[in-house]
Image (cartoon, rainbow, N blue to C red; front, side):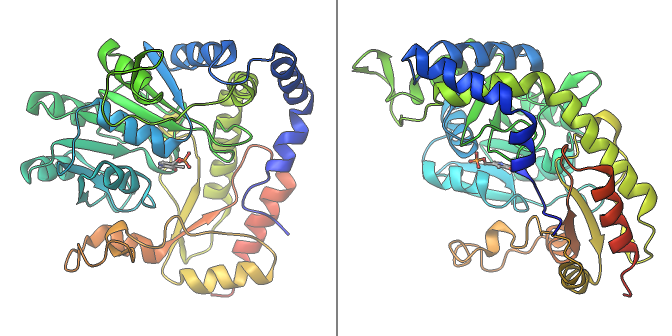
Length: 365
Ligand SMILES: *Cc1c(COP(=O)(O)O)cnc(C)c1O
């Protein structure tokens, strides 16, 4: 069976480093918010060429705390896409704010400047842009300039795009703040949950640092409203420090697999994502097919796992349907019915990639 991901293979590859980092933390006796967290925050900020990195418990918390630090309050409208599986929407709802859903480009699945302008004109007080499937949003620089002009804070959700870059600048450094997830299957993943907020602003960094720990200004003195406990633990930070130096090589391997799929899957029913160079870190390889469900059923019979990222637009989720009854975003809905994700992760062997290619090409559509 070809899985969609293989965490065991990654753990096996880094066994020595993982064991050493766990032992180092256990021996130190310091397990939460200690030297390993500081060290990882410094190196991840440096990797991105950003001034501050504040780790938190997961990527969804990163979005929520970043939005709060950007000044988003209850009842504010916050713009986001509806094709990224509710992560940002969950964070917006947790604040008591309201999502304004933007449509996305049909060719690359991400927002355009026009989509953002439309949302801001409709009253959005903050904008979240998602670098989906590993692709740095093509118009991110223009979106960033526009939001700055309009005085509307911009958050980049980089949970699928660690290391993606445009014009030599990594995602996470275009907006006022950025959120990252270190969920195990992300391009930079821990062996448990983790997340981070990245920013160049000392004020935003200070607020997130307080928001992740009860709102403390100093120990036991609560200064900031809306705070929580959302911390990364030392073991995960130590493991992330071991994985970070291998992020670029993992991203290169993902791009290599994507290139093989693009060149070697020649089935006439299948459309490929555009080649994007370093702007994509190929987090997910997402093809389009009008007979998607039939293709997925066929792949199952030949033991190739595939997945749909994501099947239900946020505004059609059972929890939100009643609030967005008449909303319909054309491209978002078309894509939801056509997309299919093929296995693509750095530890995939050439033979496994060949098997997937042969299987897909062998589909009698
Ligand atoms: C995974 C993911 C998140 C959420 O991260 P968690 O660590 O699972 O909370 C947010 N946004 C996107 C686009 C993601 O892929």
